[in-house]
Amino acid sequence: MRRYGKHTDEDDIRSRPNRKGNRPRTSIRPKHEDAAEGMVLTVDRGRLTVLVEDRPVTAMKARELGRKAAVVGDRVALVGDLSGKKDTLARMVRIEERTSVLRRTADDDDPYERVVVANADQLAIVTALADPEPRPRMIDRCLVAAYDGGLSPLLVLTKSDLAPPDKLLELYGDLDIPYVVTSREELADGSAVRRVRAELAGKVTAFVGHSGVGKTTLVNALVPEDQRRTTGHVNAVTGRGRHTTTSALALPLSGDDGWVIDTPGVRSFGLHHVDPSRVIHAFPDLEPGTADCPRACSHDEPDCALDAWVAEGHADPARLYSLRRLLATRERHDGD
Image 1 (tube, rainbow, N blue to C red):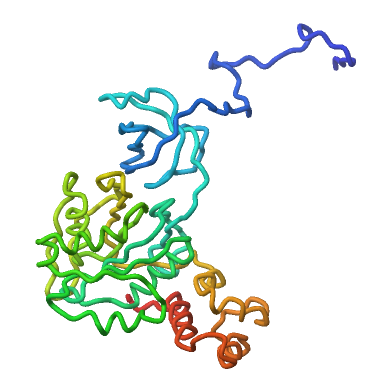
Image 2: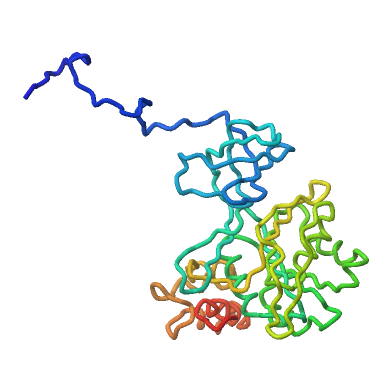
């Protein structure tokens, strides 16, 4: 066996031939410090549309990112052809740190977590007051996902011409959630759009709701210059609508006054990914009372310190009830 000393001549060392004739792979990756930054507007079958300055650019994920995937709302870095011209393609080489994330799973037993939207400031939960009937448990699940992901919730109640909003609003009154109530007549004359838009000013807002509630109709009214397909028919037997939005899409409000992210209609909102201990952060008036809770307290058990905290007058009992109702949504498997 041939042995080498400390001072070997490279010509004496036998190297394995590269059969493919290309350069050997290296773990050193370029930093792409000159990459252009942009916002992901939509993702379709691996192709991303990214807004770079004032133009949309089509891009593909670079192989070096591995299994990392970008979603609508992500801030990303691109290299390559950034002209935005037809048949050009850039490469996404970096996904910037996210400030918030809206996640969901197919159901509570599904461990596969899907990121729906990144970097949104608030979540607009669109619910019809009738046709189809409101689903409070679905609203509760969306609220939990919003609180867990760092988004502020906004209730948008549609079709008030068919049913009054009072009963539903009373259910969420103790959560101090901002809300807007709209009717079909107000959508037609523009007054509802003005009220909703006032809640969106200067923010990135993701819209979520199950099919048939009028979500896409509202988005079309907010961004008329880039309309999506109109709302589908609501089945009279099941009370469910046909999905009219098949992919998430970020749309700018006129006057650079914020962004609307329309998401596909959902029929379930799984919370398998949510750690119940994080939901308490959305209740700052109750959070100090958890200091004496037992380790890994679910905040809905006999030894929970929140009961004594509330009994001593530190917080409203209705707030504790609301917290526990939201925490309980993760344990329900009855289709909401």
